[in-house]
Amino acid sequence: MKLYTSLPKKLQPYFNKELEKYQIEYSINNLLKAWNHLERAHIIGQKYPHAHTFVHWKMLQFGFKIKSSKEVFGQIPRLIFGGIKSFVGKIPVGNPGGANVSPLKSFPIEKELQDIFIEVDIN
Image (cartoon, rainbow, N blue to C red; front, side, top):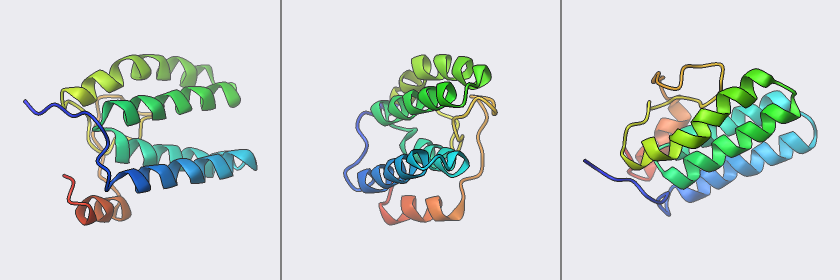
């Protein structure tokens, strides 16, 4: 069994960029675009416990911002168990992380993100 720990250094800039874009869109109240960047950060970081947990923390905060009890209550178990599942390598690849999708379902990864994983040689 492969144990995952930290986000690889080559992947960190892409993860950080999505979080920066999230913060920019969030700060100007462009919430749909902000959420999309959180989802992309989730996909990039979901194999790695700290990054995965951090994005779910941001998603929980977002749920409070938009006053969505579905998102808030959906993020709590993801926040608790997401990092553990990352650590043992049991994540649903491509899952965007929101409460609007099953936390166990894999999704196709959009080409732009696939290209990032290929570029940094992360599978």
